[in-house]
Length: 372
Image (cartoon, rainbow, N blue to C red; front, top):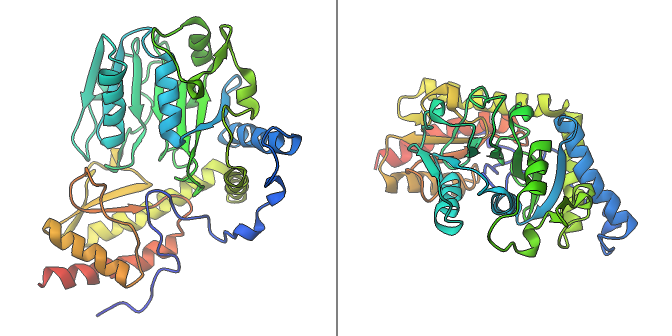
């Protein structure tokens, strides 16, 4: 029978993701709108975005945070083009975005001494093969594959190289080992449900030292430049952005950070993600027609959860369309480069009750399309 209870919020997209529970755009502090981002009021909002992020994440002393252009992609490109090339590189990928970084390193930067360690969707490479005396580029949480690294134990404390971590679906969802991460990037529109277009760049003191000691052989676009006269542009890490940001997006991000604190900080958002994943884990355990793309629980994402179904690709599309027509789940199809299936966002801004309400609808929709 068709279920009678629908999710109160059917937004399960993996980006942009659901807004926080209780979100109301009218509650935002809009005093900065129409003002210059270089005016005192704008600078203070951007400075808060940097400093509050560092405080809430519990970053080690000396780590710096900047708001940069072009989402997580911009932050990663900015870091790679500015810092890679000083030593050999190990680039790891097991999904489309990580593969994009490998393509840029090999075909755009055209670096020598690059090792590419890859794995199929739902798996990760053998982390024991990573040489931490090389620079290491990797994605913490594979947004399009539902697979993540299990921890940071594989990263050497005495490494000579830098670690470049795309953490866009991991930060605020995992307790990241910051002392293991030299360059970390993420976007607002993932775990915090913020708006798109802006990236966050977190640098360790070791990363800063690389910027001040190494000049790449290629020219850098203006929006990639983080040094002047061989020294770090410190103002960038206190809110003096390279280009003009959307101040509406900035205050939306500050609202999301306040919400994080209201649910117990990073510990609270991680718990919410884990509770959401648990709903899907129980559902998969109870039904033999659905499984995780990442079958190994140790590497399973607790935000971007990817599922395979015992259906043909066209049946999967029909199931997704049916759920959307019933207004119970929007935007849950697998990423275009991934195997056919579902991708259900389980990040912190999704209420567990909405996932619990969705599960019977998955069963109903599966029965509808598999019977045809």
